[in-house]
Length: 275
Image (cartoon, rainbow, N blue to C red):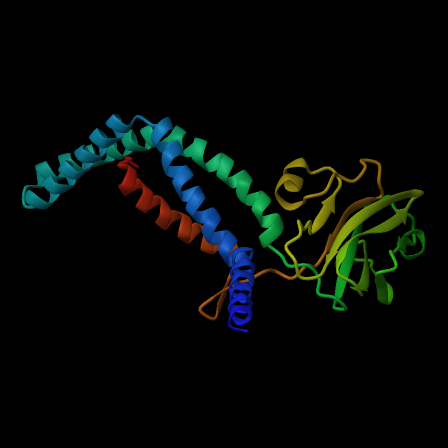
């Protein structure tokens, strides 16, 4: 009996740890620590550490001169000029290494946001599917556009045509967790949009776009709609995800920014890298 109780307790602890380690908060903490370390190491390898150290020492010396000789105007003005030149020299040394750090991290954050930026639609909760139509669509889009749903997704209200925005909006609900494709037919063509229902951490795409390469790169996780499609975009109003910190909801990007900066400064000191 004692052994059985011990194994039950161990199983509960392992289950709790497993659940926490796969939670959004744990993922953000882990990613922040890794990115903080990568930022510092990458900056150290791509920058002239000796020159940056000299530039920072010179700036400190000029700042000290301003404080020591504040009653001597010519010396102070000369020091301010040297501070401006020294700041420019430092920024020049740090510019390219910062680009090497910022560009890949920005692209990585875009991908992480697919998982942590929004939550799936809760089961049986209503949500809106919006199709933005091009101006070439027929005179009556409400009749020209048709929606085809999988059995797990149902329509809970008639479609609404927002004529001022040239949009068709459907109110839907999912009866079972999963990832589904809804099909919209318009102008003799059919296109699909993925819908995530449940409570896991799926890869979510809030919008599917036609063209607009750069906007698709940052806001969509689905292939582009056909160029000749009468539909310009299809979007879903997924709920935003807030990570609970001591009872306060925070967007993961703000938490990531704070934790990665703190981790970066700690690793900078541990590794002796000049930033």
